[in-house]
Image (cartoon, rainbow, N blue to C red):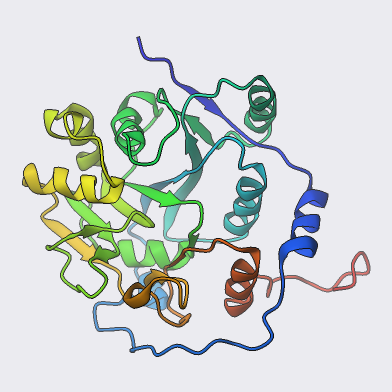
Length: 297
């Protein structure tokens, strides 16, 4: 019988301060990259807010590793300060079985404090079935169902309000949403969605959990494999690519990269702290910080 658990992480705010001071290095000058204006299929946040009566739910599973304590706590800060009035959004961190005694203790502390970790019944891996285990396990282990399930990397910055506003007018069934590959493609019905972060409607998650097609095809680049499942099963008739609002960090991946833009949904390949700093500054994420005598920033 499969064993599954839900765990969580706690790190002191002083650790985060140390991370910022130690690793966030301001670039000497802004980098310029060519960028084409967002096309007509882009959804504006104010338009979505105008029809905010249509609520929905979204679970974002960030696939990461147990020992990435600093990254998890940093992402908790990044996502915890965002608001998204038109949807119910939960962010959880996902990895495979934990055997290390030290990690078990630390993760138990995280569970007690945050309750935002899912530990799957698998051996930690990238392209050997972890994504399949993630999707196929959810209908059984989750206490409720969601309209949408997202798989995301831990080196991607998701702007939650922009993400939910783009999902708001889309179908709730048979939906496959993300950054379509290859990089030059704008046709979501060709290729597959990048593993940086893609969304499936709940019915597709249930299909993955019950179908023999994904069960017998779990090895290989995880995003490409998911696309192959859906094609073989004649699923995901409703497909949407959020290009160019989803992209790789400027200069990191050829035609998949472009300059940072205001209507961004996700920025991927944030491997270094200075890249994170540039992104957070560009989107002015601390603009809500009020003056206080308790700190001098």
